[in-house]
Image (cartoon, rainbow, N blue to C red; front, top):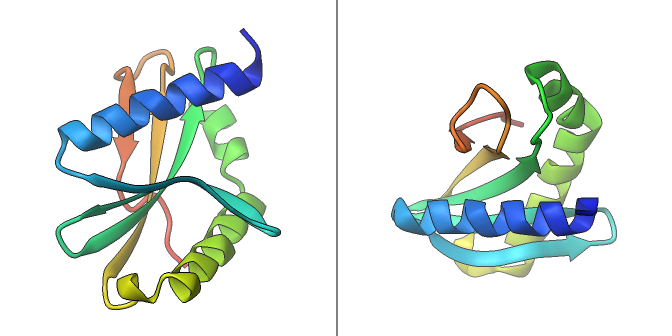
Length: 118
């Protein structure tokens, strides 16, 4: 299975998890020239920008490297573009989560709420 297919399956699993836990999926793979948000969801008054990492052979060190400062900055910048283009969400709380799929030693879907902040 190639990386793109594995990533898409991981995002599908993450969306299913979020829906089952009361989240509404607003967008998937929302892109700008500067980056992409895997999943944009909402629960109550909070808009949640979700980065999905499918790591069937991963470790916490690998996850840390995948979510380096440059990647987090790109997600933050892209999320600001989303809010600017979708003003109806500008009065919501904002949160940045990470969902890790299939990493050994962790639940099949491992949800890290408030994984990082600006």
